Length: 141
Image (cartoon, rainbow, N blue to C red; front, side, top):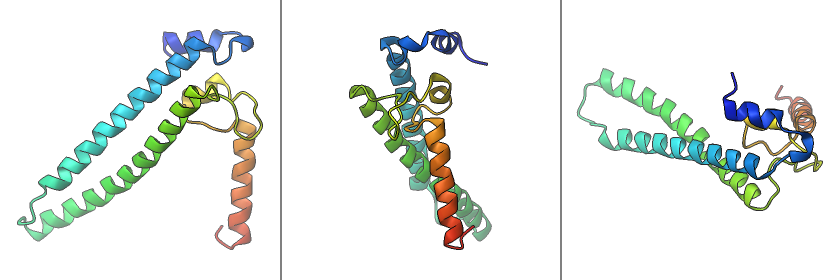
């Protein structure tokens, strides 16, 4: 269910696309996502630093498995931080919300789902088809 602010953005006319209100909304959202991710990465670092190696083998194995999962999550979140920083730079450069491939609007609904999107849906689908074709041609799929 969209928030009142999201509903307002969705109801704006096409000629208001990426107006000051929309850009401010996405900037706030991206900054909030960035702060949340940075906090979580800090929690992971703190957990790693507090680990006691004197525990028994079962505790150590459980901790190492949890740590492995957290490191994978941290890797994903670190990549997401780079994507967020890129989106914030696009806002500053007045390029946010437009497809890097076609220059067409990405669209508010897609940006609400993925505020770091750089491609419109059609371009993203083409990219995914090319990647699938490439993997199949290499025998990976």
